[in-house]
Length: 350
Image (tube, rainbow, N blue to C red):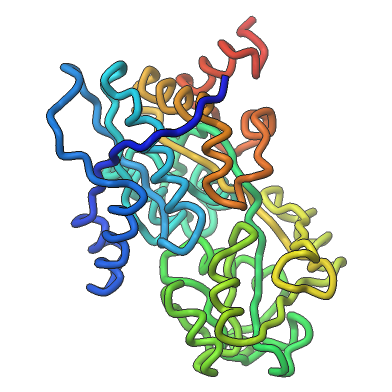
């Protein structure tokens, strides 16, 4: 039964996060203030004798992963006196960074795109030089994330191919968005000459950069509605570009981790729905994470599911059955699998 969230405290590992994410001092202060407002730091005494500390990797503060990770920890920490699990979040560069840090043992859990979960588990794409991450484990899936291109209104870019040789920001180096851009462009047959003006600005810089003309477009793989796009609209008029239907069909057939996606007309004042590609946000861990800890985390999220959904508009359409049944590349962690079976969400073991 879903319960409501009450005010509680979440410890945050900010010092180590900043070095990994490459944030400026101003961003560090912004992050800290944001978390003090929404997820105040717990400084009281230990509440359980046998404690297990876990850290969740998220992404930048303007996306969905950061507040989702904060809420996950908030929910887990509400009952830490009962189960002994204490949770904190870290800002990171996103999906690829989270996977690598989980593999190295520097993070315990993380939110990642389903395409990069696929590549990590099978050792392909940016993970080609490493062994397949066979200890990678799925926990649950979340919202759809859509390949989104934003341009200034009146800049002359009417379709995706118009952006050849334009000044495009594709995401921070090491981020899931940047790697997804490279995969998408490879599938579309663009050459290096077609993308000679790419940049890797931080998400917090994009609205000003686009509206001032520093860049012509930015690309993000993001859940909708997105605060980044709304922030950009406050500074200048924009257009959102989609992909041709035939291109989408071709890429979906070739790559199993992609699906067709639509940005609805009612968002951002669009004149019509925008067709594009999508992936799914997923929550992952590794096989070395104890079953009871994973069970505790999943149980907490599903107990407070209604509050969890209200955290961000992109999460508002989540359904429990879909979070469990989505076909994720890596196997379910046994702790998550036990919870789903206990709740009748998956068939009992034969």
